[in-house]
Length: 379
Image (cartoon, rainbow, N blue to C red):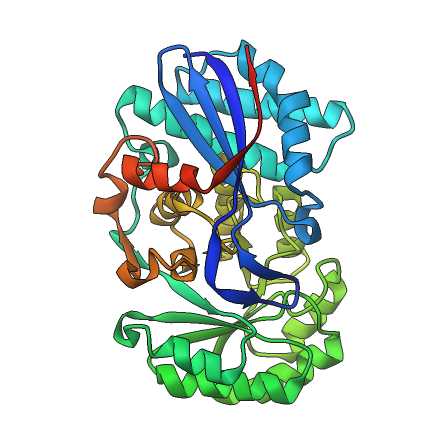
């Protein structure tokens, strides 16, 4: 099975409400969709959401890397087996490093998913088959509460079937009193049977993180995600000793090298693996396996506004990852045409229901209808 055409698209679909965090403001999705076509008529689809503040990538760099560094290798290699794909991905990474290109994870992640999707379709197997044995029959989604006014949070809460929500992540900012009131409100709305975490995207200083988290302990916080700047390893070490709340690293970790440094230096309790930022499913698996060998759990993260492509990849990853504690990926709540039919739990039955990613043709057409073509090139 050989690649004969590569198409890259920009997915841009509006949200039903504006999404605020300390790092970003979004009114709609901004994904890169990679479409690989093969000589046997099969297509594979991948997705990435490049983030400048995490991997120093954007849509233009993803296009540049795939077009100039990946395409010659993609066009020249057969991918009829899983080993073919693993070898090819290693070569793509080596090619970038040999040319002095180090910001390629998002590009690699989209290609990784597209190749595995295509192989699954060719072999008539679900993508999950290539990631290892299923270790859990289901995994509940965690939902995120953006930096919204309290009234808006209440309004959105009343649109949710709260009895089906088990995990909530609350985004918090620089103003301590506002953070306390936000978390207080979320706790009062969801009750005491819901697991609540906070995320700061690294804008606190050590003193601010200490003060904020000490005040938030009354709300029984399960974890604090990226409370300090991504490169403040020493600060993360100190904070873990001061605060009895598990620390999740996100922006600090997007490679196996990062994970090894953070874990070996005792700078985290949980690592947040986002398929896109970590270079795809196979590299994410390596990170999770390393973390498991050091008794560190992981969270399967999600980028804001991702489509069913990344979400399906994340579902397969979550169901085959033993050391999982949280699973995100509820971006469908952001879109007007999907949130009302939201499912708050994934199951192994769903992941086994189709070939490759298993996305229904109608949903795939809906994704592509919101895409604009960026570039296409042929063998």
